[in-house]
Amino acid sequence: MKSVKTRRIAVTAVIVIVAYLLQTAVFPALEIAGIKPNLMMIVTASFGFMRGPREGMLVGLFAGLLTDTQSGDMIGFYALIYLVTGYVNGLFEQIYFDEDIKLPLFLITGSDLVYGLVVYILTFLLRSDFNFLYYLNRIIIPEAIYTIVITLIIYPLLLFINHKLEAEEKRSASKFV
Amino acid sequence: MKKKNQTSHTNRYMLIGLSVFCALMMVLSSFSDVASGPFKVLANVTVIPLQQGINHIGGWMGDMKDNFSTLQQLQDENKKLQEQVDALTTENNYLQGESYEYERLQELYQLDQNYAEYEKTAAHVIGKDSGNWFNTFTIDKGSMDGISVDMNVLAGSGLVGIVTEVGPTWARVRSIIDDSTNISGMVLSTSDTCIVSGNLSLMSSGQIAFDQMENNDNVVSVGDQIVTSYISDKYLQGILVGSISEINVDSNNLTRSGYIIPAVDFRNIQEVLVITTTKAELTGENVTEE
Image (cartoon, rainbow over all chains, first blue to last red; front, side, top):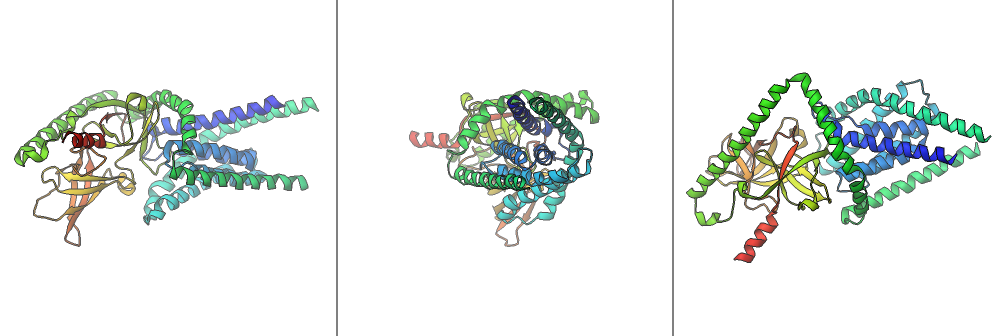
């Protein structure tokens, strides 16, 4: 039972780190019109609605902390955003079904839009930069669209990994009962 | 039912606890490096080496994407020509700077001004900011290679940015087109100073803005080169920022402002040069000499 749990933690950690590496080292080369998709958001939101608020929260926290070490002068800023995103997505676990791809797409897109808004408000609006429509058209919406496209590729992969792990957990649980 | 309530309660407490933790970290890290230190060290040993490796793959994938639109041959040729243009621009800039130098009182310019003479070290870009909002990147040289904070970073013939953070094997560079950058610039031909500031909304059009240039009798026109000024305390003097693409007199009739096309193509930076002298060192040395 314990080894299964450790395996889940290890696999999750690897997924987060790989996502981070893709995000910072590979995606800049795939930029379209200066916009890259937000892979960290896909991973955080997916773990949220696939595994519930607690795992969503923890995955979000680590994804955010990694982002912070890369880009911030302030540690904790992105961590907080991703943390809350993971939690809120986790609340949708109740109505989530594997076969349905509409809800994940909707949630991930929604998360990315809200993320864009929050970053705009906290880093630009507070410096009295009111050019909101420009940022909306130039960054927030293109990023969300590009993220949807990448979701269609990445999400089935995450789902597959989750299925594998869940099957294994069930097997080892039945062994003990 | 009760059990379910309980777990949702613990989750809520966890959320509150972790949020408070994040908020604390934010406050702490904005006042001192103590809080961010451990995370930076952790990043050093885990993700930075991986980034360095994966960067090659990223570059390769980028090349693959480019192949769809252009032929490899054209790329190589373009690269060669670009290098030549860079070299010539540097040389031209150097010569121009020198001729203006002689025209004016020479004693004002006893300092080593031209950046062609600064010692430089080359570095590769290994990672970019993960979001779309800012423009910072990571290079593969750090304090072990003699890089320190406030060193100026060049690419090709112009200024790219400034080192804001240093680890043992990496350094973070904030580019001049980043929204939070302000530089004190100067028109090469007239020595009028101005403030050059990056702007996210101009980034897509490949321009940066300048303002607060004195509206005097000096003729400054489109195409004039802007270099870093002598009053900047972080940027070394005389590094090419770009050339003016638009200039207007402000409505107050006292100042002029406009736009600059940077000398560097920010969409495609792979290798950069770091000047291993900081302005502070340079001016400090001069003080002791005098």
